[in-house]
Image (cartoon, rainbow, N blue to C red; front, side, top):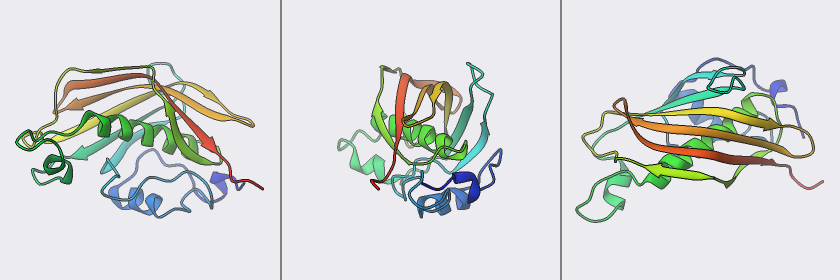
Length: 176
């Protein structure tokens, strides 16, 4: 499995165009982490990413999604109840943990494998302007098994709407 750093020099932030290139695959090398393509790409930019930041000092990543009233998920939710399903916020944070693992140099494709505790305290509606996902790495295990465990929160226009603890993402490697 190729080393992601042979294909990509880590940056401290990423634009939408760079995230879209990651969704095409190969950004971190063949068979390595990538983001999903739109519409499942749940962020427009990553303004911050680090190896040693975050609440636990083990790395962090911040993503942002600009909300527009005609986002696909508003019409796809319950008729007459336009909101961003909280499961998409959780998926966005899982995406970010997998991206962080590839960005930090671990080979393999990211797969969400679990979450400990989730709490929803509000909703993202068409009136929301920006969603901010803040993810702090709690533990990173590298070796035969690559595993990232992180806590995160989702803010809608600066107000916390959703928290998740012990989000787990593993990196799988292609069979030889």
